[in-house]
Length: 377
Image: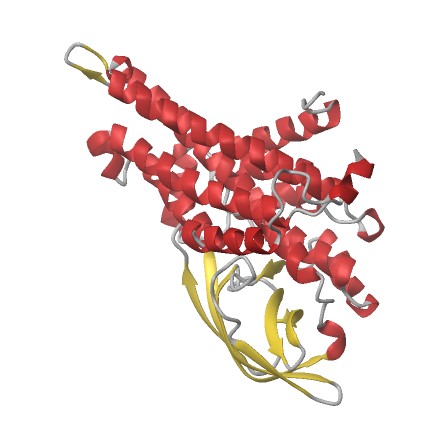
């Protein structure tokens, strides 16, 4: 069985690595921090020019219609360079509208593919252990929304968001135009420098056609997990690479600290955690591209991403010694990103509880819990 990338996938990975590395130098990151901006505008424009912003969107709407595996490779490159661009939420939100939305919403997907509109997802999605705080009353023409959306990523700059609302029929994902009357924003900056906004919804009226089908909830959850874990893979990989370079240069007691057994064992633990995440993530992306059920696989990946981000991040900080807490040195940025990604995934404890609930319901042993899928192998 061959698990290697094909030529097209390698080309995409190489292009993305080249694109992001050009803007991921330490000097560029310092300049971005000092600019006070929350998006790397030049990098985002390059993503648009190369089509990376619409890589996952259906071809009929102007996208490239590639798979989650290809998007994973791009997001891994983004994470390695700490590229502050709204790449994955824009595409996952637009793809969800294309797949689960009413045809009256299709112009939004076209606008997302042409980059005329910027789309995002609420952090209060099903991958997080929090209650839906937007209540919806049914009206003759649609829904009347009241409540709050906290920490909406890119909420300070996006046009359209997918949020979850609680209706009499249950929780459903809904498309929300952020320019709608009755929405008040309080803008802020997240842990790793990403722009966010808290939304207060006061009698906001939206058409019934803005609601996506309920099947979109699980689809959004598993794809959001795959996307964030892909970025974490890039963040942690680069974090390890930089740390290895450092410990080979740092000399104590007349020799590089990389020769100390304790340091070697620490870095070996980091490498094991990284490769465990990589293999699980690749398996998840394969299942998503093959149209196979992936709920438990996604939760397992989310847990591994949270754990690997925390473990690798703190071990890297530790072996850096005093440099690890010096904000003029770049390694702390990777820890900030890992923390933000863990919060986006819901945190390892909450994710593990969800995985435990899933296993309690699907209490068959072995990987062949869904025998119907064997016909696709």
